Amino acid sequence: MKVYLSSDMEGTAGVVDWGQCRGPGAEYDHYRRLLQDEVNAAIAGAMDAGATEFLVNDSHSSMQNLRPGELLGGARYLSGRHKPTYMMEGLDASFDAVFLVSYHGSMGGPSSVLSHTYNPAAIARVRLGGVEVGESGINALVALGHGVPVVLVTGDETTAEEARAVCPGIEAAVVKRSVTRFAAESLHPDEACALIRSGAAAALRGLSSARLPAIELPATLEVTFRNADLAEMACRIVGVERTGVLEVSITDADPVELYRTFVTVVLLTRGIAE
Ligand SMILES: [Zn+2]
Figure 1 (cartoon, protein in one colour):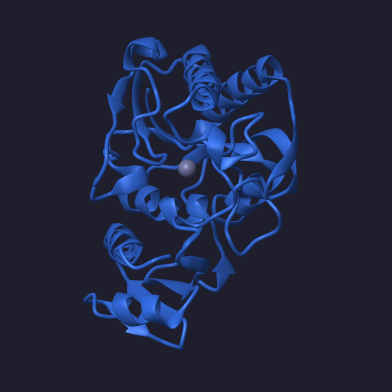
Figure 2 (cartoon, rainbow, N blue to C red):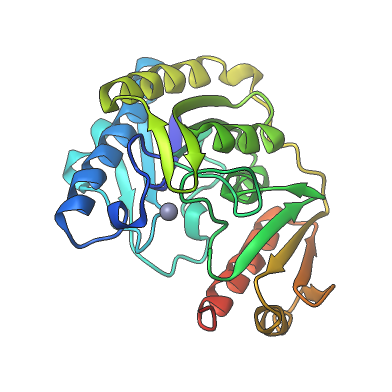
C-alpha cells in the first residue's frame, strides 16, 4: 500500500503565528520539529494499517521544512520551490491514498489559525462548484484526476469541516480549536501525534469504502481577489475568464489541468500582491 502525504504547517498543534512557520530562527526550528513529529505520526499510523511506501511532498512556504533523514517508513521526500503541481506534486495513479497533514482553513471561511487560500495577500476566497473551499478542496482536484481518494486531513475544526465538504467520509484528526486567525487551544503535541497516528490507521483500514472527491466535472473554480489589479493580470492566462471587478473563473473537464491553471494564477499574481 502506497501513501502520498502533502504536508503544510499552519495546522500543527501549537502553531498560531506566522513567526512560528517561517525561518530562520529558534521559534521556527521548534515548530518545524512539531510538524516533523506530526508527519511521522501519520506515517506510523499508515504503517500500523499495512502501508509500505510513502512520498512526502513538503508544501509549506519554500517547501523545505522537514529533515529527510528523520522521516519514518523510508519515505521519499519531495521538497523545494516552483513545483508545477505545487502542493500535490508527485501524486499519480500508483498511489492508494492521499493524506493532508497540518492543513489550515480557507481565507473566506470561519476563523481558522493562519487561514489563507494559497496567498493571503492576493486571494480573498475560492469557490469550487459554488462551494467555499480551502486548499484541501482545491488540492482534491488533483487526487480526483489521478483516481486516488483523500482519506486523512489533520488541523483544526474548520479545516476538517472544509475537507469533509469535498471529501465525504474523510478521517479528520482535529488537533486544535481555533479561537481566531491567531489564537487556538491545541492538544499537547504528544496527544496530537497519538490522534494523528490512530486517525491515519483508521483511514487506511477503511480504504475499501473510501470515495473519490465529490467534484462534478467539468469543474469550475471561482477566485475572488483582494483588488482589481490581480484579477486583471490573472485573466491574461489562457482559460481564465474575468467575471467581475475582483472575480475570475476557470472551468475545465480535466481536474489536474484546472488545478495547474489555478497554480499559474497563484504564481503570476504573487508578483503584484502587496
Ligand atoms: Zn503553509
